Image (cartoon, rainbow, N blue to C red; front, side):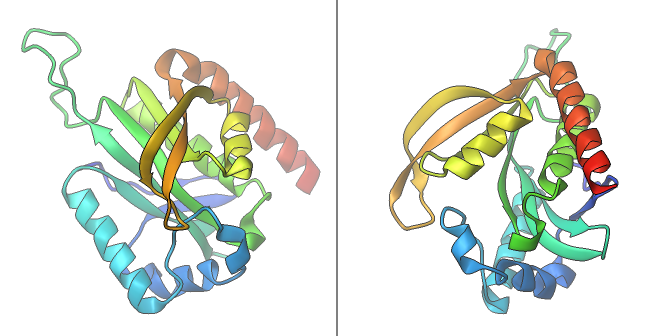
Length: 213
């Protein structure tokens, strides 16, 4: 299993999601349903409870770790994000790259959604900064992938703005939020690129802080 850590910044706290978050997540997802055309998230308590239970099962299976995104200014849950598709490679027994600590070789960040009031506030940038730092600096992964519905131009721009590199389009990759078979735009950051991406994100967050002040 991925370590169930809490990641804390100045704007946001990422907590491993649990049943106690269900009500607040429903409030967040119900803020502006029109804002989530390309995202799949529950909007009722029973559906959200199932979503959270499924997330816990993913975690127990070693595939992912889902966070409740908590805005620190008012301690309000404003969305979700997830480490997913963790891969544990089968290195040769004598390889110096072989891991014995259970950490993944690569991972994906995805299933991200935010309440309308939390969008364009710096929260997403800091949340990604926290997750990328944990992936690269703690787990020492080789790659972090990010993907989105190819039609979701806002999400694609946000991912590119993080400093991720566009790799291409994976056709017929999964079920879309609208019930169609979606094509996915895939992006990635690799370990060698992380220092530059980290500096870029730190500059963005510093600029945001000056703007707020």
